[in-house]
Length: 441
Image (cartoon, rainbow, N blue to C red; front, side, top):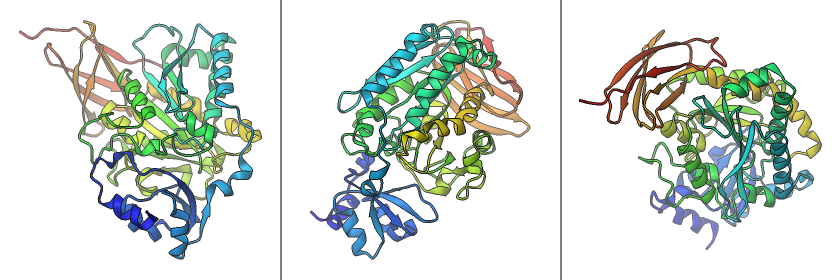
């Protein structure tokens, strides 16, 4: 079957094609993505990292040849990036490094696997907290990197970040101790270890993991059935936690991408997510001085549409406000550059973790209660922020400064309305209101 036939076949596929195309060729195309918008609409090609010079295109075998037949200047990316394949640690070496760091700081760190990749590699997550064995009533934050295997910079930065937190906490650094003592932090350095071992974007099944999550446009529920195994594990992990702020890391540009990715409509907290994005970019000189992106930030859909991405899914179904951070123009830069990338992002990484304390929540006097809560901003603006599920008698939401009304509907209990104020200066100060559980009569 030639590439044109594949494109036609894919156009006729049902909505069950949420898993996306199988990536067999990776091509860089000079010019505008409008030149292949028919192929994108048909679902036979996915694009990424659109710039003023060109864009990346991913598709089945024959893509490079077919684009050439259309008169486009297309370059085979693996050949183009061959010289950039530096001597990074293997998966086994990264695992050994993580284990040694955690073993050095066992009072605040725990290393667990949330499952295995297609090829059986562990998906490691490091939990960092002052009571690391206990599930505390504290805001939860997470970083996930390298869901695209050929975007390696974030993986290395996460390992460096884990090590620094341990070192500074042990040394009595006041800022780090304050953060760790009041937050539950989870860091996954590599979501796609198979792809990183092969130096490819996709996982071992040829799937783009950042097009494989439930899509907020076409999916009515967050179901993991039939999705890639790495995505299934992350979905289960997310469902078992209470994350309220997070970021995922990529390479191929230098910019903070904020929601939405899948639609042009603005996020209900658009000004707030831009503020968080600006906060990350401002202390990162290469990012804030970008020539491609004003101030080093961009709305995802304004850049290019992504369907089935993790960023939109995490907020829609789990109240987890997530940013996508592109760390390096080169996806696989020389490993000697990693210390500079870490220096560029250092203050930004700590800034964003601290921002999880911009918000408010509640706990119930009776344990193990689930239910729903409707959140409305009453001042300075009137904004209905929707309803969210909560579990384990605990809920927390990252919010901009203002006054809020939480209408709490616990299963088996009376509805309770609480009012709370969020201050712009309330960082690292957990703001939970306690509610006495009153059974329904």
